[in-house]
Amino acid sequence: QYGLIAEEVDQVVSETTLPDKDGQIQTVAYQLLPPMLLNEAQKQRKTLEALQSWSSALRAEVDGILTRLPKEGGPWVRPRGPRAQGPRWNRAPHRSAHPAGGADARFNRNS
Image 1 (cartoon, rainbow, N blue to C red):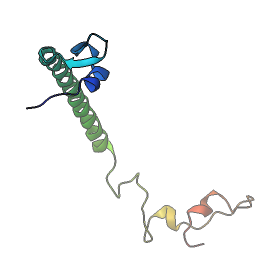
Image 2: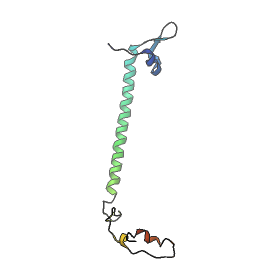
Image 3: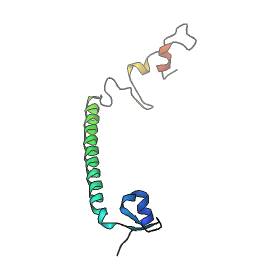
Image 4: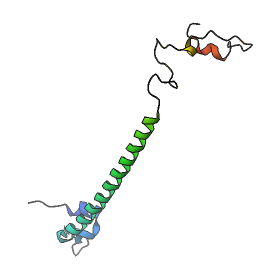
């Protein structure tokens, strides 16, 4: 046999508890619980369905974005790692009047 603690139930749904003559919570009106629980289950089901729909839409949007991104090694992706090769990375530094040696100097890995 199972039961609920009336004081704990009163903190959550006070309309399902019954007080004694002194106003203290005495018992739970168990006959009121099934319709209330069914209503809450239906609300949660609708929320779950909405979240699943939203998640599917986000997943489709991310997949669409990923298909439009260049693949690794494509023309818009900088090479990564210590062996990165490419015309911009091996270019001789541009000397200018700028104390840092010019904008292209920062891309030269050999200096």
